[in-house]
Image 1 (cartoon, rainbow, N blue to C red):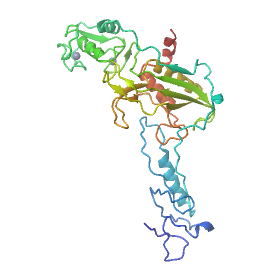
Image 2 (tube, helix red, strand yellow):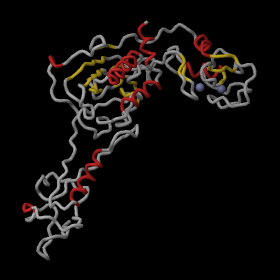
Image 3 (cartoon, protein in one colour):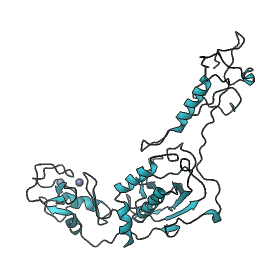
Length: 363
Ligand SMILES: [Zn+2]
Ligand SMILES: [Zn+2]
C-alpha cells in the first residue's frame, strides 16, 4: 500500500512506506506544517528500526476492571504519530515490551519482610468450626420484627407480611417469621435467610444479600496450597523509591470438597506457581498483611469457571486483584498503576478484611 509522500523529494516519485527513504539519512527538515503520511496500526517484524516506517504498536486488549490502569500501548501509538508530525523523516516508537518477571534473583538476595513473621504459609485451618445450627448462627445477627414492613423480601420476592415463598428444602423455621439484620437493618423472612445460609459454605458468617454487610468472619473455599512472600531487590515501575514484595502462590490440582461447585469431581490449577508483586512501601506491606488474612480465610482463590479460558472446575482468582506483571502494564495487571493499592484495599474491605482484622487474627 504505497503512500505518496509530501515534502522535499523529487516530484513524481512515490516512496512506499517500509522502504528506506533515501533522504532519511540526511535529516533535512520538512517544511513547517507538513504532516507526513504514516501507516497506522502497522506491525510487521521486517519493519525494523531504521526502515522508514512509523512503528505503531498493535492494540493489546486490556482488561481493565478497575478503570484505573493507564492503557500504555495506545499512548505509545499516539506518541509515534505526534513525533512524525514534528517533521523528522524517521520516527520510531518501540513497541512496549511485556515484562512479566523481574531480573533473576538469587536466594541470597531474598529477604524476609520486617514486621511479618515467616516467609511462607500453607493453608492453615480447614474451615471455621461447625457444630452450630443455622438458626443458632443467624440468631446472633438478627433482631425480631413483630410488625413486618409493607415491603418485599428480596430473597424470595414475596411480601414480608406473607409467608416465605422459598420452595427448596424446608428449613426448620416457620415460614412467616421475619428478622432484621442488626447492623444494616435489612429485613427478610427467617426462612429465606436460613435457606441462603445453607446454600453457602456454612462457616458461621452471613452476608446481607441486599447491601453486602458481613456478619461474623467471612471465609471462602480456596483449595489447599502454599503462599510465599519476601522482598526482592528490584523496583516496580512507579515505585522506584523502594524494593518489591514478591508473593508466590502455589495451588496443586485436586478433588473438590463439599464446599465446592461439584463435590467429588477433580479440579485443575493452571499457571501455578503464580507470581505477584507489591511495592515494599508502608502501604504495600499493609496490603500484604491483609492478603495473609485473606489467605487464611481462604478468600484469595476459588474453584469455578475461568473468565479468560472458559474452563470450568478450575482454580480462579476470587475478587481480590493481584499484579502479575512485574515490569510493564500491557495486560492491565501490571505497574505503574497509581490506584492499585487503594483499589485492592477496597476489595479486601468488601471481603470483610480491614486493619481491625489484623488484631482479630491474633487471638
Ligand atoms: Zn423471603
Ligand atoms: Zn443489608
